Length: 240
Picture (tube, rainbow, N blue to C red):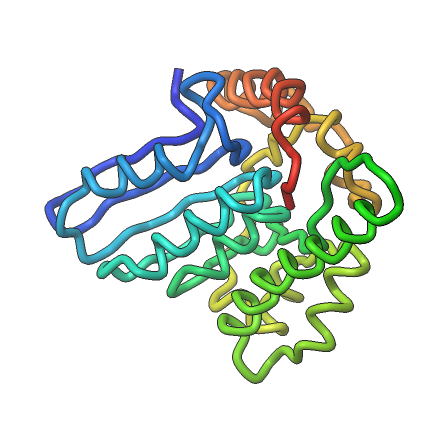
């Protein structure tokens, strides 16, 4: 079965990278993406001049995602991000770290504040809230660097506060997308369990995709992705 994390060498000068699942701190199986696994496979590509990142992810661990984004920023190759269906939470930060962002007109970005499960006394919980604000700043910097003068700090913080689901056109208007392509038939492939963590999920993402519209291989990918959600929820601490 095709991995949700995969690297494909197209030629000596070009390579495809696929992140089609959650971004986690610890690998449960071969379908997971961690910063360590990403770094290892990225290094194995050698001296390529073009990287095509295909992403369809609900997000996951914030620090793993920031590390992945920084790897792509520093890479000598020109990196084009293709949002095949959804880049949510920290996945949208990874996308914003790329040189170029391309979105089919039916794909989406989801941007929100970091969250975590926490317990403790009042002093400890206040510190946790302060820590989350500091963590959020790293994402703000990345979004603003991508958007240029199309997005203000005040506006991106509002977008994050409101857990905003951006269409390709909206992402383009905010400078978070460079080009819009015609619609594709890629399924969102995000488990219902993970959607429960979000408040403003668009209705079209909650509706099941008719089986007749999905090839058999793609249906298998959707099923496999859903099976990962239970393990991910225990790994989401500090996640976006």
